[in-house]
Image 1 (cartoon, helix red, strand yellow):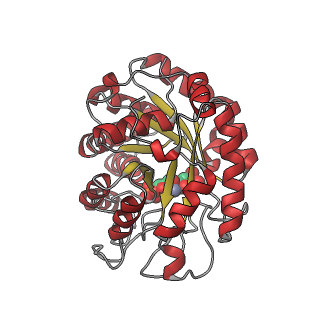
Image 2 (cartoon, protein in one colour):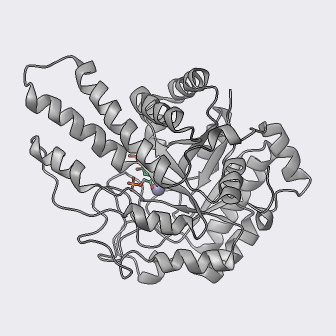
Length: 359
Ligand code: G3H
Ligand code: 13P
Ligand code: ZN
């Protein structure tokens, strides 16, 4: 069994210069797809569950399912991460259910809609860091609000996202504030805002530097070379998947995601965790639509879900390869959470040291 903390995994990724895709899962098919891809690529895994995933599947079902995936794939280090925790209770109950890492998203208030003041973000994130590190779990914080630089809007379709219109200042993480935030909170990883948003409708055209501000990633990495950066909203929304979806009765207006080449550029500048949910959803939905369209008489769920799983597996494989995570699972010697807790207590895991020290 190899359940790894985010901190240990991202320290390894930093040391060896790769990025790790963090795939959202809600059910068995998505879990199997990620692990089959990881096994075939010898890649370490981040499985993340949103609050929506936890209420969809239920905490017990999710926890047992992840245990089963670990048993089936003992050679793959698996980090189990809470995506967009909105308060202390969400983060702590995740750890109670075996998560090795939590995101405390204090960029929004606990309602997951209202942009939060900086001081609130620092205080709530610091509280979660203090509690999580006692048991060796890792913490990702977020500074800056995710949303579109084209429209000034956050995304609301996932039930988590800023409401109202946001200024360019709110939508781009300020490098000086990032330094202050990391020092004040002690987070293990920092999610930053640079124009990406959740969901399929990120950009109305092929993104350039005006609407996908990768220079912000570079500026923050220059100021904080040892902190692990996280890119949210990093689905690429591939055109070929949009075409399969639309050719089989779907209606998705033409849209653009984050090009994989831009993510790879981010990985060269300190991005270590890359969040992907929409691409997996789209791959599965397009595959299911194709079955339904080709054989309207089909009603066996397995006939829909098997090709859906395969489509998601292929997408995950591609991201493991492109982000350089492939080939690294077998190079990691997983440390137990108790050992991570001991290291936090003894001051060995100061964020300033992240990535500088091989675990
Ligand atoms: O945080 C965004 C992810 O895409 C999760 O979405 O809340 O619908 O599970 P969800
Ligand atoms: P996408 O919607 O781009 O897949 O982003 C997912 C995400 O950031 C989850 O936290
Ligand atoms: Zn996100």
